[in-house]
Image 1 (cartoon, rainbow, N blue to C red):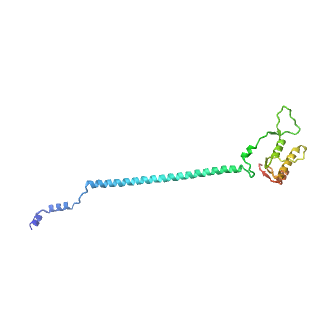
Image 2: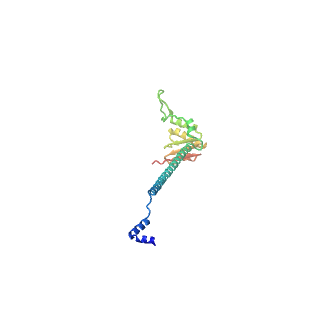
Image 3: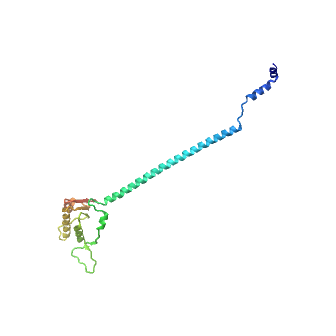
Length: 213
């Protein structure tokens, strides 16, 4: 009863202060605050490092994709160049096995001159092989094919001065009868030229027309 009297004898204000002091929440210590700040800073740094790593990874993947695309384009270009050169090599060879290489080993050039019939030069004047003789030499050496490009095909004209043309025409017919391939390129149709029409019906003769009108 005495203790109770002492508590009751105290003023209400002092009891309220004591209760408020007892019920006041305890403030966090500075050490806990510092630990929380350090933890937040660590998490933030980890998030930043993760974002930087993701950005670098995206850039690396993008650069790798670009390298793959560039490498594929270079490979396609190399294959295309190889196909072009192989096609050129194939076009340079015909079915008879003639190619640019073995043709160069047996080719020679002769300078010919279209000398009108009945004209004689002096002994000191420079002389060249006549056009007619050059044609005859070429046709006599033909073994597989003959290619001719000309816009005039009056080889079998009835004029007396056209005897050389007639002999060339007969030589071409002889080659065609021996199955030597003859390729003729002209700007007139075979039906418009008796020479072309006659040659077209012989052997392996092919006539190609270039319409340049």
